[in-house]
Image (tube, rainbow over all chains, first blue to last red; front, side):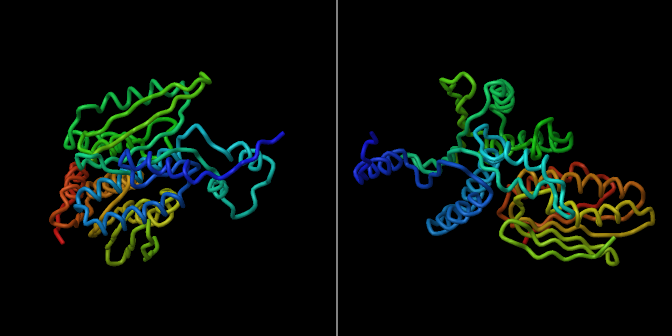
Length: 209
Length: 126
């Protein structure tokens, strides 16, 4: 027997209030792709322009937002699409003129992104996604290695890494974390919450402005 | 080695190059959906130009308001290639334009310029 579902406006309002109580102004939880990035990014820029947010702060927030969302799109372990896409790639002979990447747009990766303001006026950009347990050590070490570095040091480090080229398995320049830490002038935190399944970890990264 | 002029979009910069006058321009914001796809084809023309062994002169102008880390990689590779070509005798100049109050962009330009020796570098405020 199926339980009858009834919409509860009160419960939904409660969800909104929970977000507001944490100072969250923008939130997205679900499958992300580049179009979502563009859309939320535009709204975020408009909101900051309307609020007359300091130019330097709004540039830092926007830049961090882009890097965070692109991290989810590239690396979240919770994804739909790739198996189906891989199968298609193998089965379909490459049609002339079509690049393999053309199908990648169909891939979706799950993540959370929130942007808001703390009671003391400090703004935050937080992003979270599942990662495989086997990657926890690598990501933690990579973040620990840049902890405490200031903007100038991070800028120099970014150049070194860009020059050296991306590490194996990277789909970008391999400097996303350095770039976020740099924009936030070293004011950032991260946390890892192991999931019950023993396979995944909930990885959160927050930058302050 | 073809001349090109690509208009800006919301996420990609205005990019132009003319091998006859030796002028390259990258202007606006750069956080493409697919960085490789956006830059690879047009920049191959610029790289071909940089490979030329004649004594050429050229000005590479960057007027960026924002770029993401994948684009930073493209810029770094280009700076390195320009410098390598300059070391072979080509007369190159890189102009890094940024808003007078934008220390972020200024710092990034200065950092990239660390790669340069034979290439003339100028920071230009707008």
